[in-house]
Image (cartoon, rainbow, N blue to C red):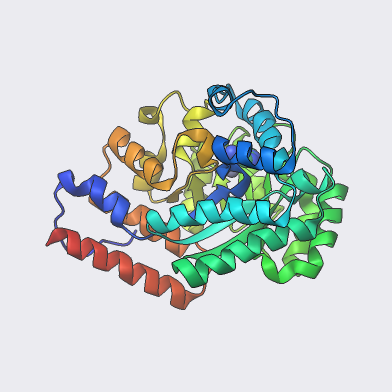
Length: 349
Ligand code: ADE
Ligand code: ZN
């Protein structure tokens, strides 16, 4: 665990520090950033009929009992996305938030099958998203990259067909992931498609241990050969697995507000993030689906720090972990970490 610059920061400054400090976001589904207002605006623009009468009624439906109850509404929300401009506008709204929240790097998940299964061509999805990423780099100074996720409730053959369709646009994304309904859809179901992605030189991640058991984390590591685990919080049920994650330096992209909204933890005070962090697991904080779970990245940092009584050193470790675990060049990471150090030094003054 890297020590923060040798300074003392009063705990009263922690909220301001959390907001000001440079950070990376490594687990955010771009379709999960669609705010109800944008869903309604896009529905009107595209002549899509929604089953909710108003923005307020839609927002009121955001009370989830588990992952599946959320996914049902999340896929319905994504049905308003039809044109390249829609994907661009959605990503641009999130990337503008990144700028405001001092997120220097974001690695955004997207779910092409949610769109191609509705007849939206892969090309439309990827062009809209990647033009927003390019615009973020030039207009906002935010480094943004895309990770293509396979929907695990669908078959591996469908994932392989999606990979095939993506190959003409391979330069537009840096890796692949595995999301959607975890229980009953273990990592090994996707062994062949992940092996192919590894051959193609793509980065590999997978959701595991959000609702699924520790064995899913082992299988994501040993069978899919992933480099990071998305969520992973159920690793605590297996102390040998926790030791392995520490020794290997495998990052967990933890999403505290999501975990509470989807009833993985009863409340934030029960969350195991601090325990894992203090044990030496490379934990990061992320927003998952910010429009649905009550906040963007800084809100996750603020509420988690308050509930778990995190220190400035914890904040430093979390932000530094986010850069170290990013799929970016060593030069970029060193530059971002230097900016992080500068912010901590400035706050001590
Ligand atoms: N897709 C969007 N958010 C997800 C989550 N938290 N888990 C699995 N799939 C998802
Ligand atoms: Zn997720």
